[in-house]
Length: 343
Ligand code: DON
Image 1 (cartoon, rainbow, N blue to C red):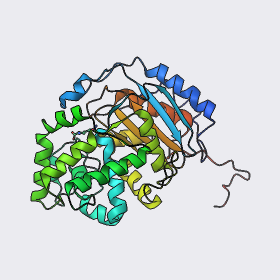
Image 2 (cartoon, rainbow, N blue to C red; image 1 turned 45 degrees about the horizontal axis):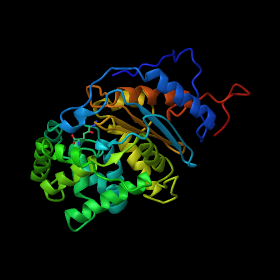
Image 3 (spheres, protein in one colour; image 1 turned 30 degrees about the vertical axis):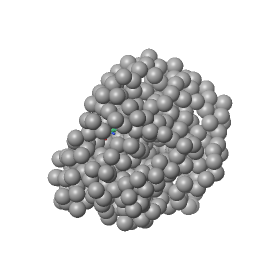
């Protein structure tokens, strides 16, 4: 996979921003620019394996950035609601890490990339440990099964409350999407039962699949994604509400898991070109985190073959380059004596 840029990196001086997002007017101009640049890009297909998603308008496109100091800028269809889908996974993983500890979470769930599709069954069979990572369906359902609560209803209340605190507002379920996916999720049901047969699901498989389907059906917008991302970028504190949703320790482990497998079998290409932890969803959302700086939310329903939004990937790469967010980027220190300064 390659995410092309409309300029030659080799001849364009790359930005490497300091610990802060650049000035808001710079960010605002770039949002307008990126929306104009990719607004007519019609590569990719709207998802249809969940029938309710097939009705999405492929022309929709919204981009939003929220800084760790609370600044919020958006362009296009940034308030248009869509279902959270797989973007729910890193946030439920974060809540579980905080509840049982990140080491126990790793032991029970795994954190290594599978290199296979998001809903792969083969990945379970190929791994003797039968663990996955929390970003693919199998690992995500195992994560949902670990959510605190004596009953599936209590577990659901914990998930809905936790994800709403990340968004800074009460999130609600899209009943049409929930019913549509519940009527067609036999593969996920099969994955849950297979994990249970290996002792890698920690609650009832059918109730777990149901709660997982609900979390995927929560309605958000690109603005909500940017707020949720900014919360992970700000050590677990929601920059709009000031609420500490999770610990800073948990944040760094969640971002590592996102970097590893957030874009599934294309996660290596994504890091190579965008250089930031990100997570995509099959309804067309992508959340991307610039640690210490802010969160980026994009929405466009046209997807590539791996289930990742095409415009979302292009826009995120462009902004990462132009805003200097790539965590792997550095500029050579100016040397005075021809020898680098100590330390
Ligand atoms: O479980 C599923 O298949 C969907 N609820 C979520 C999949 C998804 O978002 C894949 N991401 N690109």
